[in-house]
Image 1 (cartoon, rainbow, N blue to C red):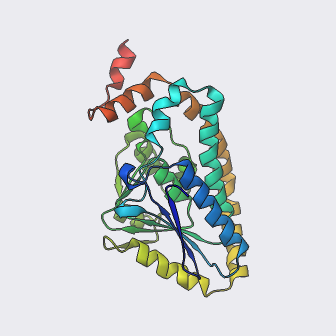
Image 2: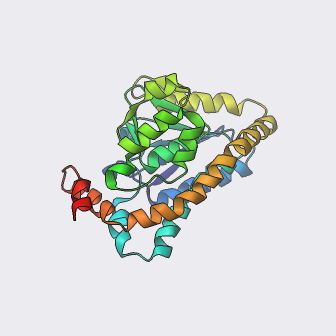
Image 3: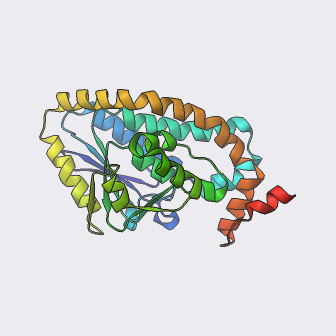
Length: 263
């Protein structure tokens, strides 16, 4: 599948986002590949876990820029579809009976941050940064990020991340318990695969039950947030602030959102 490689290690699967030219931005091909891997893991008892990572030293930069640029010309129903599609992918990660482990090198931004936080376990390189970068483009978080952050972090830090759009270091998130392990740069995938192999040697039925209990508790918040995100994000994608934010990104300049308020 385009932009997705599934590596079968027998005890676990490794799903690689292979879109490095765009820092592994999300694509429909990757969505399809990840869904296929999650379905395979659920169907085959030999598979004890799924590891999710990005090619060439970066986890995921978030949404596809082409879609974001075209969003103002889309019908609202089409914008809502794109947001709901990411929500469904997050739901598939939560619903998979096998643990899903994010192996984060470089960084996870925007929807990439959402995807990492949807996983059951996160291993990150010590120099990795996590960025709720939506605000930088005049957008609001989707992929359940607000739900994940509110479940994992103090409210003040969740607000700081989402309102500022500045990156937070893996070490800080690890100290707060939002990340399971921080490892030397270049070692995140190996460390995540070690965890996956250990999980695969355990009692699969009990592990699935445990994950189900944990996810059931998370879904109370996550389902509400995934649904609540659709309307404001669909509106934001077509708003002048997003047009300015994306234009500023493409022009490698700082966005001037204040000018929009003066006009």
